[in-house]
Image 1: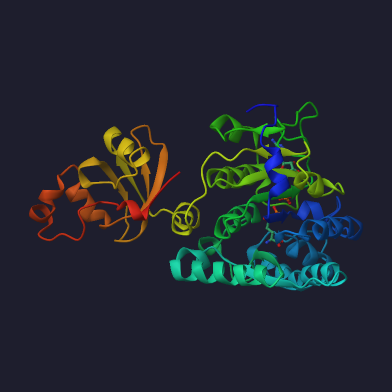
Image 2: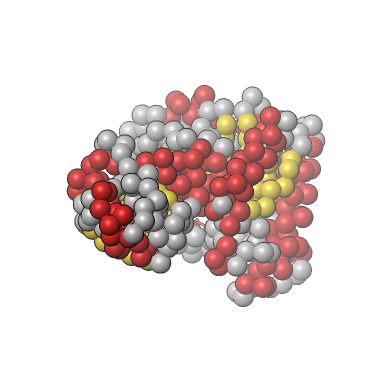
Length: 377
Ligand SMILES: Nc1ncnc2c1ncn2[C@@H]1O[C@H](COP(=O)(O)OP(=O)(O)O)[C@@H](O)[C@H]1O
Ligand SMILES: N[C@@H](CCC(=O)OP(=O)(O)O)C(=O)O
């Protein structure tokens, strides 16, 4: 963490930009759609779309549905939220359609669930559709497909979805617009003395601890999901800024390299599409604890994980399923696709490759996780 901004100028040359707009940036204190805010935001988005490829990840379907149905507050039950989202999503798209059509730009509705990106073929379909829309000069407006999303299929919040989209399209920048100026040392709604951080060099556990959930009543996830999304983006070499969508001109200022909001410096390098999919789209179904030598070989030597480096196996996963690799201290440092299922790995853990066949009676690969199937985090 530092208060000196070093890399903001790179934002000036960002050509492919994902902008996430939270419910809080679209609604007023009572959760009603704020037309004035939206119009101002629309101007910023139009400016951003000039000479850049713009993707918008927009929340607000539930809030607009609540308003349209005249409900006193946001339902707490899932079918209630889903019904509101179904009503509100078309109103949300109408607002974007009008804002962009006035300037001759087309928008496209893209609704996703987490399940849509778990399988590589479907992930590539999403990627190719988004690429084609961008080539055609269309602005994709993306939201979670709330009406079909139940827990296990869900992203759960649009910060996570926006982080994923930034990785899918290999964006140059991810801008998360909320109702706060950025990441503070504490929740500014609760702590009047909380201070804004201009720059985060690395998302450490201390930085994560500053961000808590939402206290707004309309948002989902709060600052904590934004900081996690920023961490993922910066890990993939993507600049990320969290700032206010309620203040006109902030998005523009970000893309002009001005010192607004909280800038997360990229910590990793740009990933291949396959590594990005493994790192960010997949949810691990198990954990492999590896020894220090294997960790070093994977992180520094870009090598595969051999069975001899596996010290422990947790979970019930099949062959080809995603697994997290953790070090002896339990820190996750890589994710990959297992070449053997959990039971097989338990049996060959600690054994030399040459012994796999003797232990199992057969052998698929020499590796527990092949390096082509590995993404270091
Ligand atoms: N450290 C922090 N810095 C800034 N905001 C924080 C922090 N911790 C929690 N928050 C809360 O996160 C909220 C933004 O998240 P959320 O309500 O989910 O908004 P959105 O609809 O924009 O996603 C802020 O209104 C603020 O109350
Ligand atoms: N998909 C939901 C929003 C979910 C969400 O993450 O909301 P927010 O925290 O306001 O960005 C909707 O359109 O209402």
